[in-house]
Image: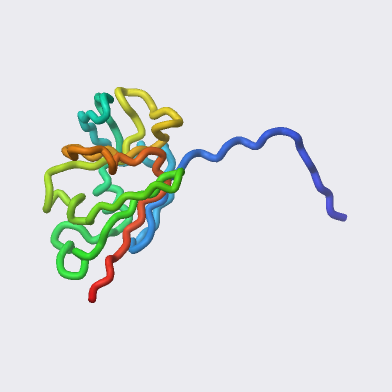
Length: 155
């Protein structure tokens, strides 16, 4: 006999996560706790009259953990790799992989989960890209859900 049990109790909401996928050696599925175990970065930045200290994991560290070619391996065909950031509302932006590698640029981009010492609110987070040094914050993506490494076609 098969017994079915139906409950009117609400199920607990799944913890928010961000995935790192695409052309990576090790796909990642990270929640707040997993991100907290990674090296943390702090960036002082401002955009649209919002300023402060943003905290989170450097995008380059997430990519390194996923096995993306960086440093001396970022040459030749690997320079065709780019990173597409996706948000819950369908918004997407792109960074060339070289833009995120400290061997190419000093500017930092982080996947932030805290602003001025507090978790990001539902409108901003739970995860947000903060890219220091950009004159326009169009690539400061809110409500990040995915980070995909893709290869631009070559002719």
